[in-house]
Length: 132
Image (tube, rainbow, N blue to C red; front, side):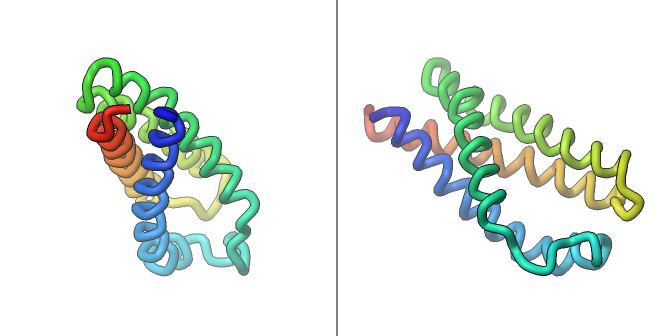
């Protein structure tokens, strides 16, 4: 039950944060730079697959250690996971795509670091507060 609560708390907090980010970043950051490269409509299937995989990694690599060592460890490990994951995506795109920008790379890595750290800390805190 502990891991289900951790997963749901991480998914809920990260999902909300990412929704807010994408509502701003889509029209203000991605669309102006990437334009025609973007799909005309959002594709739910790949997005859900990403979120299931990423939230599971967040729980395993950040929340789990945070439950053993304290919430600050969840936040730190979440920040490291977010930075590595988002840097992998953004720097690969910057290396291989003509239209990728350094501004997108920097902002996206910062976002992934902060959002993953915060969601990991929230999930660890929820599990600890519920005492499961």
